[in-house]
Image 1 (cartoon, rainbow, N blue to C red):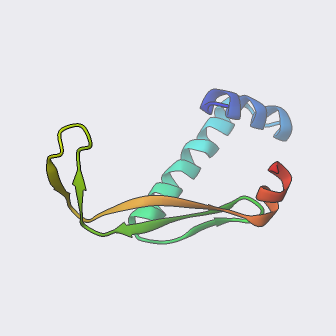
Image 2: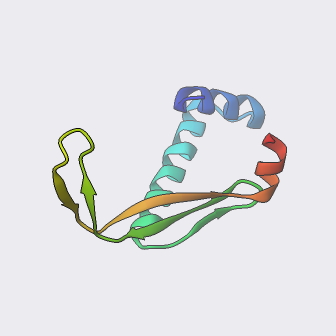
Length: 90
């Protein structure tokens, strides 16, 4: 499902216009991005949570050439699935 399909499905479920649903989805995106920038955890009941994970610096080796190089420490966005969603999928 892409963003357009999400907006259309949300519109049919909530009886809101497509324009209003687009504003809701865009607002939700903004709030999630903003919270992650601040280092906050975003938790959705029965779905899971988004959080920032710190990855340490490490050395890697190119398997084709054998050349070693270093990857700097960085932050990534991680998602932990809830048990409810996991059970409903499996």
